Amino acid sequence: MDKLKKDDIKQEVFDLYDDYAHDRIPRRLFLDRLSTYAVGGITVGSLLGFISPDYIKKIQIPQDDARLASKFIEYESPKGGGIIKGLLSKPADSKTKLPGIIVVHENRGLNPHIEDVARRAALPGFISLAPDALTPLGGYPGTDDEGRTLQRKRDRNEMLEDFIAAFEHLQNHPDCTGNVGVVGFCFGGWISNMMAVKVPNLKAAVPFYGGQPTDYIEDINAPLLLHFGGLDKRVNEGWPAYEAVLTKHNKEYQGYIYENANHGFHNDTTPRYDREAAELAWKRTIAFFKNKLS
Image (tube, rainbow, N blue to C red; front, side, top):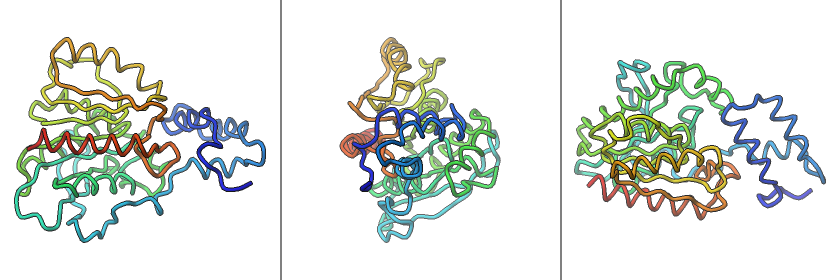
């Protein structure tokens, strides 16, 4: 069979991958169920290869891009994992202090895709910090399967403290204006929502398909920009209740649901990627940060 295309794959395969990627089913059951869609010349191997991330070919901004000054740093997280490693990036030609953006990874550590997103966030005129919550366990191990396994070993509230500590580190960085926002994806979307609850002086939060808080929503000060995939039933089911409480307490927010987009639609390393939705959501995100962090 010719090379697989997105239109060759049934939506149930994407839903199945979502269950696997979020630890709702083990790998063996995932592969067993995946085999039911290996028909008409499509093999399990070709399906698995197609839906798995491709980090080599999809990097938009490489680590050595001359437009950026990008390096790994360490900072202290006394309430979380201790010493945390993160990627710090800013425009190479910057001669003034810049507003800051914390970039929060998915449920598998700081993989090459999120490093790339952090560089994308810095390029329009920000200083970004992308922490690796797997640092206490040795850091992102090189594959997403191993990364998910490691991340399950950490308490998510301790990881939340790691990202709050990243906010404090970046807020006090000599190259930062002190105005700091956060953007996160999946697990990182939940972290972004929770930082809005927990950090009174957070200036903006942008959760991409993130789980919603249920308590202390009235404590949110940061304006919110929320992105959801229209096909992401699991995450979207919590949005109406969250929106109702935000409205009740007169919180500033904008929520967008991108029709026919899957969970993970912004991640351009997998076929769940939806170019139109991803580019629009990112355009809105950068404009939001420019407005709220100035």
